[in-house]
Image (cartoon, rainbow, N blue to C red; front, top):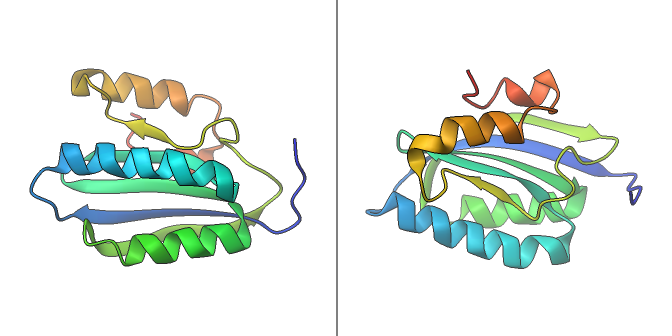
Length: 130
């Protein structure tokens, strides 16, 4: 694991504003996966009930720049920071960006539980895993 002294984790929620939330979600995931590896960002993007919930983690400057882009993205409104802290390292370092729901939304709750099974309680509390 790469040790980064200024490692930041942000969890936010936002209201989805697009007319096709599922298509927007897939587009956001594709863009995130393309860009995040270059920026050292990993995390999880969940969508449900017209809302996005995302965990971003990585070098503090990269997370700040990514969050700034998200705040200017017209597919999001009412962005609310739920948690913002410096950490020792990534909780989801192996993913450029995990995303839910997948092609089968009925399986999303189970997939989310599996993705978060080893996550710390201070992460799990922000996602609907129960």
